[in-house]
Amino acid sequence: MHAGKRLRTELIVWLTTVTPEGRPQSTPVWFHWDGVVFHVYSQRDKPKLRNISSNPPVSLHLEGGEEGSDVVTFEGRAEIATNAPPATSSPEYIKKYRRLIEGFGWTAESFADDYSVPLRITPSRARIWRD
Image 1: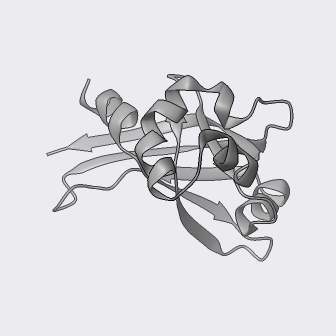
Image 2: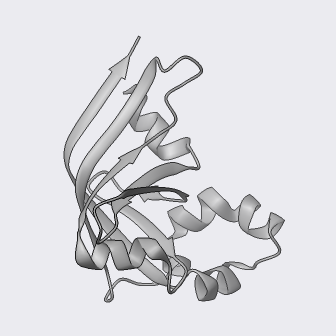
């Protein structure tokens, strides 16, 4: 399935949260899709964490292709997964982002220290459209 391949290989998904005032806020994030939920790691004290705490419904979308002809979006519910292991415990995540982690001067451990807040996003609806 084309969407499944994109979810395994694309590096960025746009996460849209909603502020307590009701304004949408979109942020590009690194992610791992395990076939059921999205795993994202955040730095502490980021607006998306406050938004999720007060309003857990979110949307996610991959880039739409050059002319918007390859759309993959999800709606779902996000949670701050305080009991989830750090990024270093996800070999798939580290393998996917190793080049970028090293390129930014991190080790897997220092990345996990900087991005220490695990998020789990459970989709409830998907929209996939390909021209």
